[in-house]
Image 1: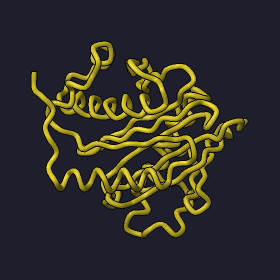
Image 2: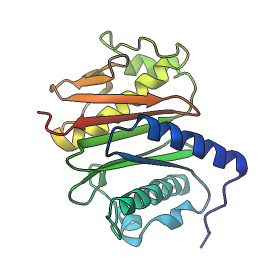
Image 3: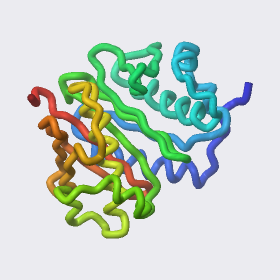
Length: 222
């Protein structure tokens, strides 16, 4: 079995920077974490988790292991231990009772967020490289009602994409509706989004060293 690699000093710096940025934007009660993905991170998957993830590509299993390793630590911080985070048939992670959470990764970085139910009703997180979104993808993502406002011009499209990914993850556990990008309207300046079903979701984001968006539905929201 391949053991997880030890991160380099540069990778540790990027992890620390993103961890601080995520902690700074997270609402009360929400815990966040991140980890550079390394060869051997699939070893962090618990046996039941590994069995629930059908992907056989090494890169996907490494990313899943890295994200779940973060989540296991965050759950332990709120008193929830020895819990497998299985992949549900929908593809979303299945969280233990009284907890909400979300996982994400790009090619290099994995992130996770968890919170006790009651602090928030649902969470969604996404992470992306701090690079402009390709034009052909932006054409699929953006709709006229979206507002990116004061977001840095060269990254506004990437933040918008990441926001819609995070909003979907936050809305789906509550509404069980499959949404396209065109079904989510985002206002980055206002820090909110709304789905075609009327689900209202709050948004916060950071852009250094990577674009990361945290979406959440406030406790008690209709």
